[in-house]
Image (cartoon, rainbow, N blue to C red; front, side):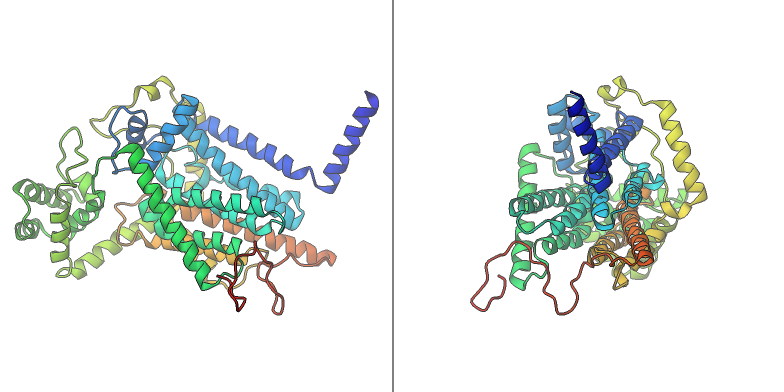
Length: 503
C-alpha cells in the first residue's frame, strides 16, 4: 500500500511539474466557480418575459412567437429531465464557465502560464458579466451560445490533424450552438455571421469559394430546419411582433393629428386608429421617448399578443407611406434612441423576479424564493462598479472596443484573425439596433460586453506572454496566420478538382 501511495504521489508531482495536471485543475476551479455563481442566482432571476416563457415551457399557456419558442422548448426539455425550473439558470452558468474553461485551457497551452489561464476564468466574475449570468433572458442565451462557438472554433483550430472525428464532432456542436443563437434572438442574426466564419476557417484555414458557398448553404439550411422543428414541437401562436418597431416610429415621429390622417389613408380600422392616436398623445404628454407600444399604446388585460398579428400589414403600410415624407424626423428619432442606448443604458443589475402588470408569477417560482442575502451582496458588487467604472455598462465603450478589434490588422498572440471576427460580431450586433432599438437597456449590449471582455483578456494574456518570452529569449507565441512562404496548416482534407482547387 505504501509503495502504491508513493507511486501516486510521485506521478501527481510529475504531472503538476510538467503541467499535464493543470487543465484538470482549471476544470475544477471553473466547476467550483460556476457552482458558486449558480448558487447566488438560484433558482434564477426572471424578468416578465422569462416568467411568461416559464408558463409556456410548463404547458400552462400556449407558446407564442413574441418571445423565442426555441427558448421555451429548451426550458421544457431541461425541466423534463430534471423536474426543476431552476435548471435553466444553472445551465446558463454551466455554459459560460465551461466555455471559459476551454478558453483558459487554450491560453495555458499557448503561454504555459498558470496565472494567465486563471485570468481568463476571472472574466466570469467581472461585474458587467456576472450581473446577468443567472437572469433567464434570451440576450444572455445569445451571448453564451456565440461565445461557446468562438471557443469551439479555437479548439478545432488547435487539434492535431489525426483527430478527424473529434474535429467534425466539435464543428457539429458549434453549428448547433450557432443555430440556437440565430433562433433565440432574431435581431442577433447579423452577429452570427462573423462567428459562422470562425467555424468555417477553423475547418479550412483557406477555404475556396465553393467551400464558402457550401458551408453557407448548410448553415442556412440548418437554421431553417431548426425553425421548422421548433415550430412543429411548440405550435406557437403568430404575433408578428416586428410591427412594434413601426408603431414606435409612427407615434414618436408624427403628431397625433398626422397619425390619425395616416391611419385613415392606410385603411386602418377605427380601433387601431384610436389606439395609435392615444399612444402618440400619451407619449407626447408624458415625455416617453421610446418603447411606445408597451409604454403608451392602450392595452387590454390580459395582454393580447395577437393584436399586432391582425394589423401588422396596415401598420407597415402606414410606416412606408409616412417615413419617406418625414425622413428627417425619423433619422433624428432613431439617432436619439440609439445614442441613449449607447450612453445611458439602464438595468445594469436585474434585481430578482418581476412580472408585467396584471400578470401572475408562476406558482413554481413562488415555492423557491431568492436568497436575499446573496442577492443584495451581488447588487452591491455590481452597482459599486457601475458607479466607479460606468463605461463597463455602457454601449459606447463596447462599440469602441469592437471597432478597435476590427480595424487593427494585427494582434499579439495566436488568434489575431479570430479576435477581429469577434469584434465584427459585436459591431454588427450593436449597429443592428440603430433602426430597431425599442429602448435603452444594458442587456442589448451584453454580447458586445462579453465578447469585448474576452477579447481584451486574450490580447492582454498574449502581450504578457510575449513580454515574458522576450525577457528570457524564448520564441514568440505562434501566430494565427502562417508567415509568407509557408503553407497554412491543413484542416481535414476535402475533395479537390482536377486542378487541385478545393471544392
